[in-house]
Image (cartoon, rainbow, N blue to C red; front, side, top):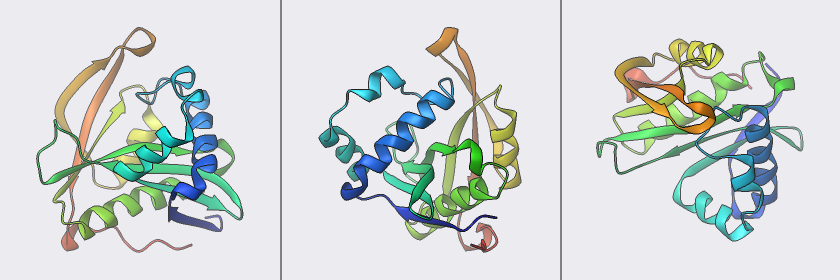
Length: 173
């Protein structure tokens, strides 16, 4: 694994988070519920508001952000559930354990915040992401839906319990 540091994003890092967000939307336009065109013109205040209403982490390799993951609560979730959202690793950092570190960050924070389950939606076509989530004990819940972007993307809901008994092994940095 590379020398990564994962830190909660702050309002002072909004320009870094914007750069990562735009890169992820260009790299995988079918993987997120936002679009590049809809995000590029958003103000820093809009982005800071999102950082203040969801947990968002940036992954750093030295002074360069190379990934991101988020965690949030939403109306459609049960009160004890939290969603893993916005998971992305820059292509040069893929295959080096950063995805595992980011997922582990969400699982650890979810447990610390007292949530009992982490849920996520992943594109049926995204085999690499599904394999990552499988490694971390996520299983398909049976709920699927069709995302309207790009002619329709089949999304699969996956979930896994959290808590002391379910925490992932400690990650090495």
